[in-house]
Length: 492
Image 1 (cartoon, rainbow, N blue to C red):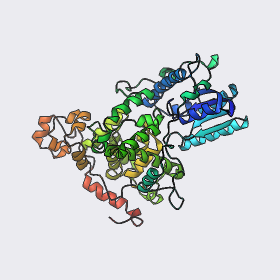
Image 2: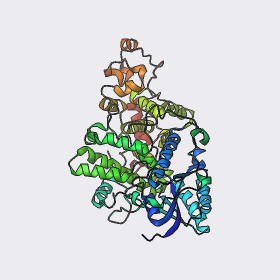
Image 3: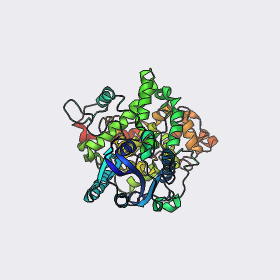
Image 4: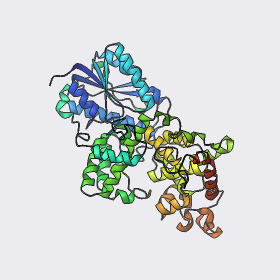
Protein backbone atom coordinates (compact mmCIF):
# COMPACT_ATOMS: atom_id res chain seq x y z
CA UNK A 1 0.00 0.00 0.00
CA UNK A 2 1.35 3.41 -0.98
CA UNK A 3 1.12 5.50 2.18
CA UNK A 4 0.75 9.27 2.17
CA UNK A 5 2.91 10.10 5.21
CA UNK A 6 6.18 8.80 6.57
CA UNK A 7 5.38 9.52 10.25
CA UNK A 8 2.07 10.33 11.91
CA UNK A 9 0.61 10.89 15.37
CA UNK A 10 -2.77 9.56 16.49
CA UNK A 11 -4.40 11.63 19.23
CA UNK A 12 -6.82 9.49 21.25
CA UNK A 13 -9.69 11.41 22.90
CA UNK A 14 -13.18 9.92 23.12
CA UNK A 15 -12.18 6.67 21.39
CA UNK A 16 -10.24 4.74 24.02
CA UNK A 17 -10.10 1.38 22.26
CA UNK A 18 -8.19 -0.50 19.59
CA UNK A 19 -11.08 -2.54 18.15
CA UNK A 20 -13.09 -0.88 15.36
CA UNK A 21 -11.46 2.53 15.84
CA UNK A 22 -11.92 4.60 12.68
CA UNK A 23 -9.18 7.12 13.52
CA UNK A 24 -6.65 4.38 14.34
CA UNK A 25 -7.48 2.60 11.08
CA UNK A 26 -7.16 5.81 9.05
CA UNK A 27 -3.83 6.72 10.68
CA UNK A 28 -2.33 3.25 10.24
CA UNK A 29 -3.31 3.07 6.58
CA UNK A 30 -1.97 6.60 5.95
CA UNK A 31 1.41 6.42 7.72
CA UNK A 32 4.49 4.25 7.39
CA UNK A 33 5.05 4.65 11.12
CA UNK A 34 2.57 5.85 13.69
CA UNK A 35 2.89 7.13 17.26
CA UNK A 36 -0.12 7.33 19.59
CA UNK A 37 -0.82 9.85 22.35
CA UNK A 38 -3.39 10.54 25.03
CA UNK A 39 -3.34 13.84 26.91
CA UNK A 40 -4.84 14.28 30.36
CA UNK A 41 -6.09 17.75 29.50
CA UNK A 42 -5.51 20.21 32.32
CA UNK A 43 -8.17 22.51 30.86
CA UNK A 44 -10.74 19.82 31.69
CA UNK A 45 -9.17 18.35 34.83
CA UNK A 46 -8.84 21.70 36.60
CA UNK A 47 -12.60 22.21 36.48
CA UNK A 48 -13.41 18.90 38.18
CA UNK A 49 -13.72 17.93 41.86
CA UNK A 50 -10.66 16.08 43.18
CA UNK A 51 -12.63 12.84 43.44
CA UNK A 52 -14.31 12.19 40.09
CA UNK A 53 -15.33 8.73 38.86
CA UNK A 54 -14.90 9.81 35.25
CA UNK A 55 -11.22 10.63 35.73
CA UNK A 56 -10.70 7.26 37.39
CA UNK A 57 -12.62 5.54 34.57
CA UNK A 58 -10.50 7.30 31.94
CA UNK A 59 -7.26 6.55 33.78
CA UNK A 60 -8.05 2.83 33.99
CA UNK A 61 -9.22 2.77 30.35
CA UNK A 62 -6.08 4.56 29.14
CA UNK A 63 -3.97 2.02 31.05
CA UNK A 64 -5.75 -0.79 29.23
CA UNK A 65 -5.47 1.01 25.88
CA UNK A 66 -1.70 1.28 26.38
CA UNK A 67 -1.49 -2.48 26.95
CA UNK A 68 -3.73 -3.21 23.95
CA UNK A 69 -1.57 -1.07 21.65
CA UNK A 70 1.59 -2.84 22.83
CA UNK A 71 -0.04 -6.21 22.23
CA UNK A 72 -1.27 -5.12 18.79
CA UNK A 73 2.18 -3.97 17.69
CA UNK A 74 4.15 -6.81 19.24
CA UNK A 75 7.15 -4.49 19.56
CA UNK A 76 9.09 -3.72 22.75
CA UNK A 77 8.70 -0.07 23.62
CA UNK A 78 5.47 0.33 21.66
CA UNK A 79 2.34 1.65 23.31
CA UNK A 80 0.76 4.93 24.25
CA UNK A 81 2.58 8.19 24.87
CA UNK A 82 0.76 9.80 27.81
CA UNK A 83 1.04 13.52 28.54
CA UNK A 84 -0.47 15.82 31.12
CA UNK A 85 -1.02 19.50 30.38
CA UNK A 86 -3.07 21.62 28.00
CA UNK A 87 -3.99 19.29 25.14
CA UNK A 88 -4.01 22.17 22.66
CA UNK A 89 -0.32 22.74 23.47
CA UNK A 90 0.93 19.22 24.27
CA UNK A 91 -0.21 17.70 20.95
CA UNK A 92 1.52 20.41 18.94
CA UNK A 93 4.76 20.12 20.97
CA UNK A 94 4.76 16.33 20.59
CA UNK A 95 4.04 16.48 16.86
CA UNK A 96 7.03 18.77 16.38
CA UNK A 97 9.26 16.65 18.65
CA UNK A 98 8.43 13.48 16.72
CA UNK A 99 8.71 15.35 13.39
CA UNK A 100 5.43 13.97 12.10
CA UNK A 101 3.78 15.11 8.89
CA UNK A 102 0.22 14.56 10.09
CA UNK A 103 -1.87 14.30 13.26
CA UNK A 104 -5.02 12.15 13.28
CA UNK A 105 -8.02 12.26 15.62
CA UNK A 106 -11.64 11.20 15.80
CA UNK A 107 -14.08 14.05 15.44
CA UNK A 108 -15.40 15.69 18.63
CA UNK A 109 -18.64 17.64 18.44
CA UNK A 110 -18.83 19.70 21.63
CA UNK A 111 -18.30 23.48 21.28
CA UNK A 112 -15.25 23.60 23.56
CA UNK A 113 -13.67 20.65 21.75
CA UNK A 114 -14.32 22.26 18.37
CA UNK A 115 -12.62 25.46 19.57
CA UNK A 116 -9.68 23.44 20.96
CA UNK A 117 -9.27 21.53 17.70
CA UNK A 118 -9.33 24.78 15.74
CA UNK A 119 -6.43 26.08 17.86
CA UNK A 120 -4.50 22.84 17.36
CA UNK A 121 -5.16 22.83 13.61
CA UNK A 122 -3.94 26.43 13.31
CA UNK A 123 -0.78 25.80 15.34
CA UNK A 124 0.03 22.63 13.39
CA UNK A 125 -0.58 24.33 10.06
CA UNK A 126 1.94 27.01 11.00
CA UNK A 127 4.62 24.31 11.11
CA UNK A 128 3.42 22.47 8.01
CA UNK A 129 1.65 19.61 9.82
CA UNK A 130 -1.86 18.59 8.80
CA UNK A 131 -4.65 17.64 11.24
CA UNK A 132 -6.91 14.93 9.86
CA UNK A 133 -10.15 14.08 11.67
CA UNK A 134 -12.71 11.41 10.92
CA UNK A 135 -16.09 10.24 12.14
CA UNK A 136 -16.02 7.57 14.84
CA UNK A 137 -18.29 8.58 17.73
CA UNK A 138 -21.59 8.45 15.81
CA UNK A 139 -23.03 6.61 12.81
CA UNK A 140 -24.27 9.79 11.09
CA UNK A 141 -22.91 13.25 11.91
CA UNK A 142 -23.66 16.91 11.19
CA UNK A 143 -25.58 17.31 7.95
CA UNK A 144 -25.28 13.74 6.68
CA UNK A 145 -29.03 13.24 7.15
CA UNK A 146 -31.24 16.11 6.03
CA UNK A 147 -34.96 16.63 5.39
CA UNK A 148 -36.33 16.70 1.85
CA UNK A 149 -35.95 20.49 1.92
CA UNK A 150 -32.25 20.17 2.76
CA UNK A 151 -32.49 21.30 6.37
CA UNK A 152 -31.42 19.52 9.57
CA UNK A 153 -34.04 17.53 11.43
CA UNK A 154 -35.79 18.96 14.48
CA UNK A 155 -38.20 16.05 14.98
CA UNK A 156 -36.98 12.60 15.92
CA UNK A 157 -39.36 10.19 14.14
CA UNK A 158 -38.65 11.36 10.57
CA UNK A 159 -34.94 11.49 11.45
CA UNK A 160 -35.11 7.90 12.70
CA UNK A 161 -36.95 6.78 9.57
CA UNK A 162 -34.29 8.40 7.36
CA UNK A 163 -31.52 6.90 9.52
CA UNK A 164 -32.96 3.41 9.11
CA UNK A 165 -33.54 3.90 5.38
CA UNK A 166 -30.03 5.26 4.79
CA UNK A 167 -27.81 3.03 6.93
CA UNK A 168 -25.89 0.34 5.08
CA UNK A 169 -23.39 -2.34 6.12
CA UNK A 170 -20.69 0.09 4.93
CA UNK A 171 -21.75 2.64 7.58
CA UNK A 172 -21.48 -0.04 10.28
CA UNK A 173 -18.35 -1.82 9.01
CA UNK A 174 -15.56 -2.86 11.33
CA UNK A 175 -12.34 -0.82 10.99
CA UNK A 176 -9.90 -3.62 11.71
CA UNK A 177 -6.44 -2.30 12.65
CA UNK A 178 -4.78 -5.72 12.93
CA UNK A 179 -3.61 -6.05 9.27
CA UNK A 180 -1.91 -2.65 9.52
CA UNK A 181 -0.42 -2.96 13.00
CA UNK A 182 3.17 -3.12 11.68
CA UNK A 183 3.03 0.65 11.26
CA UNK A 184 2.85 1.17 15.05
CA UNK A 185 6.21 2.63 16.01
CA UNK A 186 8.09 2.07 19.27
CA UNK A 187 8.08 5.11 21.53
CA UNK A 188 11.30 7.10 21.90
CA UNK A 189 12.99 6.10 25.16
CA UNK A 190 12.32 9.50 26.73
CA UNK A 191 8.57 9.03 26.12
CA UNK A 192 8.27 5.47 27.46
CA UNK A 193 6.58 6.56 30.67
CA UNK A 194 3.88 4.71 32.57
CA UNK A 195 0.32 5.97 32.66
CA UNK A 196 0.15 8.41 35.61
CA UNK A 197 -1.56 7.22 38.76
CA UNK A 198 -4.65 9.02 40.03
CA UNK A 199 -2.52 10.68 42.70
CA UNK A 200 -0.01 11.86 40.10
CA UNK A 201 -2.92 13.39 38.20
CA UNK A 202 -3.97 15.19 41.38
CA UNK A 203 -7.06 13.09 42.05
CA UNK A 204 -8.33 10.77 44.77
CA UNK A 205 -9.79 7.29 44.42
CA UNK A 206 -13.58 7.05 44.23
CA UNK A 207 -16.02 4.20 44.79
CA UNK A 208 -15.72 3.15 41.12
CA UNK A 209 -14.30 -0.28 41.97
CA UNK A 210 -16.74 -0.77 44.87
CA UNK A 211 -19.59 -0.11 42.44
CA UNK A 212 -18.00 -2.72 40.14
CA UNK A 213 -18.17 -0.44 37.11
CA UNK A 214 -16.01 -2.25 34.54
CA UNK A 215 -13.54 0.01 32.71
CA UNK A 216 -11.80 -0.05 29.35
CA UNK A 217 -12.69 -1.98 26.22
CA UNK A 218 -12.72 -5.24 28.20
CA UNK A 219 -15.30 -3.75 30.58
CA UNK A 220 -17.45 -2.64 27.66
CA UNK A 221 -17.21 -6.10 26.14
CA UNK A 222 -18.25 -7.68 29.44
CA UNK A 223 -21.30 -5.42 29.74
CA UNK A 224 -22.34 -5.89 26.12
CA UNK A 225 -22.10 -9.68 26.37
CA UNK A 226 -24.30 -9.53 29.45
CA UNK A 227 -26.81 -7.24 27.75
CA UNK A 228 -26.86 -9.35 24.59
CA UNK A 229 -28.71 -12.05 26.50
CA UNK A 230 -31.25 -9.47 27.74
CA UNK A 231 -31.64 -7.38 24.58
CA UNK A 232 -34.78 -9.14 23.35
CA UNK A 233 -36.60 -8.07 26.54
CA UNK A 234 -35.34 -4.47 26.53
CA UNK A 235 -38.69 -3.00 25.42
CA UNK A 236 -40.43 -4.64 28.39
CA UNK A 237 -37.81 -3.96 31.07
CA UNK A 238 -36.20 -0.62 30.23
CA UNK A 239 -38.61 1.61 32.20
CA UNK A 240 -38.37 -0.20 35.55
CA UNK A 241 -35.41 0.97 37.64
CA UNK A 242 -35.50 -2.03 39.99
CA UNK A 243 -35.03 -4.41 37.05
CA UNK A 244 -31.77 -5.08 35.21
CA UNK A 245 -33.05 -3.74 31.89
CA UNK A 246 -30.58 -1.22 30.39
CA UNK A 247 -27.23 -2.02 28.79
CA UNK A 248 -25.30 0.23 31.23
CA UNK A 249 -23.00 1.09 28.32
CA UNK A 250 -23.52 4.85 28.54
CA UNK A 251 -20.14 5.65 30.09
CA UNK A 252 -18.43 3.37 27.54
CA UNK A 253 -20.12 5.14 24.65
CA UNK A 254 -19.14 8.46 26.23
CA UNK A 255 -15.43 7.64 26.29
CA UNK A 256 -15.36 5.38 23.24
CA UNK A 257 -14.34 2.15 24.95
CA UNK A 258 -16.98 0.53 22.74
CA UNK A 259 -17.82 1.12 19.08
CA UNK A 260 -21.23 2.61 18.29
CA UNK A 261 -21.05 0.80 14.94
CA UNK A 262 -20.68 -2.58 16.64
CA UNK A 263 -23.66 -1.90 18.90
CA UNK A 264 -25.88 -0.58 16.09
CA UNK A 265 -24.96 -3.45 13.76
CA UNK A 266 -25.79 -6.04 16.43
CA UNK A 267 -29.09 -4.35 17.29
CA UNK A 268 -30.03 -4.08 13.61
CA UNK A 269 -29.31 -7.78 13.01
CA UNK A 270 -31.44 -8.75 15.99
CA UNK A 271 -34.21 -6.42 14.83
CA UNK A 272 -34.20 -8.06 11.38
CA UNK A 273 -34.60 -11.40 13.15
CA UNK A 274 -37.77 -10.05 14.79
CA UNK A 275 -36.52 -8.85 18.18
CA UNK A 276 -38.77 -6.08 19.48
CA UNK A 277 -36.34 -5.31 22.29
CA UNK A 278 -33.47 -4.85 19.83
CA UNK A 279 -35.61 -2.54 17.70
CA UNK A 280 -36.36 -0.32 20.70
CA UNK A 281 -32.71 -0.31 21.79
CA UNK A 282 -31.58 0.59 18.27
CA UNK A 283 -34.04 3.49 18.49
CA UNK A 284 -32.22 4.68 21.62
CA UNK A 285 -28.89 4.57 19.78
CA UNK A 286 -30.49 6.61 16.99
CA UNK A 287 -31.69 9.16 19.59
CA UNK A 288 -28.01 9.53 20.49
CA UNK A 289 -27.09 10.38 16.88
CA UNK A 290 -30.11 12.71 16.73
CA UNK A 291 -28.96 14.76 19.72
CA UNK A 292 -25.43 14.99 18.33
CA UNK A 293 -26.74 16.43 15.06
CA UNK A 294 -28.94 18.85 17.00
CA UNK A 295 -25.89 20.16 18.88
CA UNK A 296 -23.91 20.41 15.63
CA UNK A 297 -26.59 22.16 13.60
CA UNK A 298 -28.18 24.26 16.36
CA UNK A 299 -25.25 25.12 18.67
CA UNK A 300 -27.36 27.73 20.49
CA UNK A 301 -28.90 24.84 22.48
CA UNK A 302 -25.72 24.71 24.59
CA UNK A 303 -26.71 28.08 26.10
CA UNK A 304 -30.48 28.32 25.82
CA UNK A 305 -33.71 26.84 24.56
CA UNK A 306 -33.86 25.13 21.17
CA UNK A 307 -37.19 26.96 20.76
CA UNK A 308 -36.18 30.58 21.53
CA UNK A 309 -39.67 31.54 22.74
CA UNK A 310 -39.07 29.34 25.79
CA UNK A 311 -36.32 31.66 26.95
CA UNK A 312 -39.10 34.05 27.98
CA UNK A 313 -40.25 31.74 30.79
CA UNK A 314 -39.77 33.26 34.24
CA UNK A 315 -38.25 30.64 36.51
CA UNK A 316 -38.22 30.82 40.30
CA UNK A 317 -35.35 32.92 41.64
CA UNK A 318 -33.87 34.07 44.91
CA UNK A 319 -33.04 32.29 48.19
CA UNK A 320 -36.22 30.18 48.20
CA UNK A 321 -35.46 28.87 44.69
CA UNK A 322 -31.92 27.97 45.73
CA UNK A 323 -33.25 26.19 48.83
CA UNK A 324 -35.62 24.17 46.64
CA UNK A 325 -32.75 23.32 44.30
CA UNK A 326 -30.54 22.20 47.17
CA UNK A 327 -33.32 19.96 48.48
CA UNK A 328 -33.70 18.42 44.99
CA UNK A 329 -29.94 17.86 44.69
CA UNK A 330 -29.81 16.14 48.07
CA UNK A 331 -32.92 14.01 47.55
CA UNK A 332 -35.08 15.85 50.08
CA UNK A 333 -38.16 16.63 47.98
CA UNK A 334 -40.55 14.40 49.95
CA UNK A 335 -41.42 12.43 46.80
CA UNK A 336 -39.75 9.02 47.24
CA UNK A 337 -39.11 8.13 43.60
CA UNK A 338 -37.48 11.52 42.95
CA UNK A 339 -35.42 11.28 46.15
CA UNK A 340 -34.34 7.71 45.38
CA UNK A 341 -33.29 8.81 41.88
CA UNK A 342 -31.17 11.61 43.33
CA UNK A 343 -29.65 9.19 45.86
CA UNK A 344 -28.73 6.91 42.96
CA UNK A 345 -26.88 9.60 41.02
CA UNK A 346 -25.19 10.99 44.14
CA UNK A 347 -23.98 7.58 45.30
CA UNK A 348 -23.14 5.97 41.95
CA UNK A 349 -22.88 8.60 39.19
CA UNK A 350 -25.64 6.77 37.32
CA UNK A 351 -29.36 7.44 37.01
CA UNK A 352 -31.85 5.19 35.26
CA UNK A 353 -33.23 6.82 32.11
CA UNK A 354 -36.87 6.78 33.24
CA UNK A 355 -35.80 8.47 36.47
CA UNK A 356 -33.86 11.13 34.56
CA UNK A 357 -37.18 12.13 33.03
CA UNK A 358 -39.09 11.98 36.32
CA UNK A 359 -36.48 13.85 38.38
CA UNK A 360 -35.97 16.38 35.60
CA UNK A 361 -39.67 17.03 35.19
CA UNK A 362 -40.02 17.48 38.94
CA UNK A 363 -37.27 20.11 39.04
CA UNK A 364 -38.72 22.09 36.16
CA UNK A 365 -42.47 21.61 36.40
CA UNK A 366 -43.05 20.97 40.10
CA UNK A 367 -40.40 23.26 41.57
CA UNK A 368 -40.43 25.81 38.72
CA UNK A 369 -36.63 25.91 38.45
CA UNK A 370 -34.58 26.62 35.33
CA UNK A 371 -33.75 23.38 33.50
CA UNK A 372 -30.18 24.59 33.09
CA UNK A 373 -29.66 24.21 36.86
CA UNK A 374 -30.45 20.51 36.54
CA UNK A 375 -28.43 20.20 33.36
CA UNK A 376 -25.34 21.52 35.17
CA UNK A 377 -25.90 19.21 38.15
CA UNK A 378 -26.13 16.16 35.91
CA UNK A 379 -23.06 17.35 33.99
CA UNK A 380 -21.09 17.33 37.23
CA UNK A 381 -22.38 14.03 38.60
CA UNK A 382 -23.15 11.65 35.71
CA UNK A 383 -20.43 9.17 34.80
CA UNK A 384 -21.81 9.10 31.26
CA UNK A 385 -22.28 12.86 30.92
CA UNK A 386 -22.44 13.79 27.27
CA UNK A 387 -23.31 17.40 26.42
CA UNK A 388 -25.52 16.53 23.45
CA UNK A 389 -27.61 13.86 25.20
CA UNK A 390 -27.76 15.67 28.55
CA UNK A 391 -28.88 18.91 26.94
CA UNK A 392 -31.37 17.08 24.75
CA UNK A 393 -32.85 15.26 27.73
CA UNK A 394 -33.20 18.38 29.85
CA UNK A 395 -34.75 20.36 27.02
CA UNK A 396 -37.14 17.45 26.47
CA UNK A 397 -38.47 17.53 30.04
CA UNK A 398 -38.70 21.33 30.00
CA UNK A 399 -40.57 21.20 26.66
CA UNK A 400 -38.13 23.76 25.22
CA UNK A 401 -36.26 21.32 22.99
CA UNK A 402 -36.77 19.68 19.64
CA UNK A 403 -39.48 17.05 19.61
CA UNK A 404 -39.99 17.56 23.35
CA UNK A 405 -43.02 16.53 25.36
CA UNK A 406 -45.70 19.28 25.21
CA UNK A 407 -45.55 21.80 28.06
CA UNK A 408 -48.95 20.69 29.39
CA UNK A 409 -47.82 17.08 29.88
CA UNK A 410 -46.43 17.04 33.38
CA UNK A 411 -45.21 13.87 35.05
CA UNK A 412 -47.03 13.06 38.28
CA UNK A 413 -44.21 11.77 40.51
CA UNK A 414 -46.57 9.57 42.52
CA UNK A 415 -48.25 7.86 39.58
CA UNK A 416 -44.85 7.44 37.89
CA UNK A 417 -43.64 5.78 41.07
CA UNK A 418 -46.63 3.46 41.29
CA UNK A 419 -46.30 2.52 37.63
CA UNK A 420 -42.56 2.00 37.29
CA UNK A 421 -41.56 0.90 40.80
CA UNK A 422 -44.83 -0.83 41.75
CA UNK A 423 -43.37 -2.94 44.56
CA UNK A 424 -41.14 -0.13 45.78
CA UNK A 425 -37.94 -2.18 45.41
CA UNK A 426 -35.94 0.71 43.96
CA UNK A 427 -37.20 3.18 46.55
CA UNK A 428 -36.40 0.82 49.42
CA UNK A 429 -32.89 0.24 48.05
CA UNK A 430 -32.00 3.94 48.04
CA UNK A 431 -34.23 5.22 50.84
CA UNK A 432 -33.77 2.58 53.57
CA UNK A 433 -35.53 4.82 56.11
CA UNK A 434 -38.77 4.11 54.20
CA UNK A 435 -38.14 0.38 53.77
CA UNK A 436 -40.76 -0.78 56.30
CA UNK A 437 -43.62 1.37 54.96
CA UNK A 438 -46.47 -0.59 53.37
CA UNK A 439 -46.21 -0.44 49.58
CA UNK A 440 -49.61 1.25 49.24
CA UNK A 441 -48.29 4.37 51.02
CA UNK A 442 -44.60 4.09 50.12
CA UNK A 443 -45.03 6.19 46.97
CA UNK A 444 -46.68 9.01 48.96
CA UNK A 445 -45.69 8.71 52.64
CA UNK A 446 -47.76 11.75 53.64
CA UNK A 447 -50.89 9.65 52.97
CA UNK A 448 -49.85 7.05 55.54
CA UNK A 449 -51.76 6.73 58.80
CA UNK A 450 -49.91 7.75 61.99
CA UNK A 451 -49.73 4.12 63.11
CA UNK A 452 -48.24 3.05 59.75
CA UNK A 453 -45.56 5.72 60.05
CA UNK A 454 -44.82 4.82 63.65
CA UNK A 455 -44.59 1.08 62.94
CA UNK A 456 -42.23 1.74 60.00
CA UNK A 457 -40.07 4.10 62.05
CA UNK A 458 -40.78 7.03 59.72
CA UNK A 459 -41.10 10.57 61.04
CA UNK A 460 -42.27 13.06 58.44
CA UNK A 461 -40.23 16.18 58.90
CA UNK A 462 -37.69 14.06 60.79
CA UNK A 463 -35.99 11.17 59.03
CA UNK A 464 -37.99 11.85 55.85
CA UNK A 465 -39.19 15.28 54.67
CA UNK A 466 -42.67 16.55 54.02
CA UNK A 467 -43.32 17.19 50.29
CA UNK A 468 -41.73 20.44 49.11
CA UNK A 469 -44.80 21.19 46.99
CA UNK A 470 -48.25 19.81 46.34
CA UNK A 471 -48.13 18.38 42.82
CA UNK A 472 -51.59 19.56 41.71
CA UNK A 473 -50.88 23.13 42.84
CA UNK A 474 -47.45 23.04 41.20
CA UNK A 475 -49.02 21.82 37.96
CA UNK A 476 -51.36 24.81 37.92
CA UNK A 477 -48.45 27.20 38.46
CA UNK A 478 -46.49 25.55 35.66
CA UNK A 479 -49.33 25.97 33.18
CA UNK A 480 -49.47 29.64 34.14
CA UNK A 481 -45.68 29.94 33.84
CA UNK A 482 -45.72 28.43 30.34
CA UNK A 483 -48.53 30.75 29.20
CA UNK A 484 -45.89 33.04 27.66
CA UNK A 485 -45.25 30.46 24.96
CA UNK A 486 -48.76 29.05 24.73
CA UNK A 487 -49.79 31.16 21.72
CA UNK A 488 -47.16 29.57 19.50
CA UNK A 489 -47.98 26.00 20.55
CA UNK A 490 -50.88 23.63 19.79
CA UNK A 491 -53.61 23.65 22.40
CA UNK A 492 -53.98 20.66 24.74
